[in-house]
Image 1: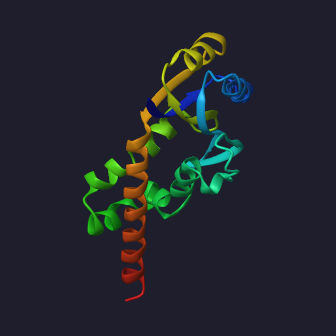
Image 2 (image 1 turned 120 degrees about the vertical axis):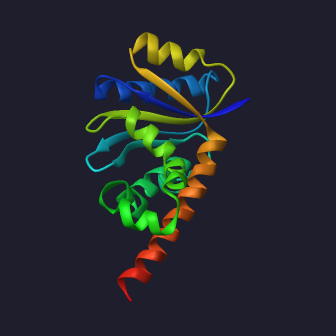
Length: 177
């Protein structure tokens, strides 16, 4: 089985909500084995905001406790700020820029695939076959799909959290000398 983070984008916001609804039906029918799914709006300044969320595991997790929530939290936190105006001296003095960029690749991929002011869907799923999602997104809704290995995403989230802590500690030391 292939554990994936599936990012979907569409030319209309309503199609993102339609995909969300249709994937819930596919889940009920057993054609998709989702864990969590969210409709996300990409706001200015690299901010993703959830518009709708479901946890298929039955654990009744809210978005903050989910993998998707972690992704949004990292982007909205100090590491998200690093992407903007804070990058230069702070990153240069705490970690190699290549390491930070590697840790941010999943976030950059998400932001690239759901452009600013657009709405998309992120699905965390065990995907044996791509047909049900591809038929819906490419065929019916004329959207786009990007798949990323879930284990790689989890690894990058852990690395990003560590980078965020290092950056915050360094900033405190620098600002409060």
